[in-house]
Length: 122
Image (cartoon, rainbow, N blue to C red; front, side, top):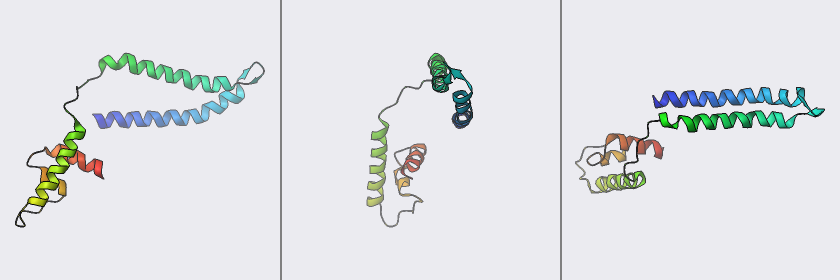
């Protein structure tokens, strides 16, 4: 669901960017303000739309699912990396091989945390 949300969000940002490259020059050149090109309108319309987007974000925040933070993630990441290095260093030669050096932390840390750390370190 999160992936779908961010895909739609990204598409909306790019669609807005595309529309602005077409509409802004038209507004600036074709609409006259006080007998001159209307630069204020060309930049005022996007500014007004940004304010609308901000209002939707703020007023819609009551509908968001808010999860309180659980501990210090940076500390967990550092501890997991340290634990993996320590286990790898202290393991006997006869220990089974692991596909990644972070897999040595599986004894203490969840597979999800290890996978997320791998993604960050890539």
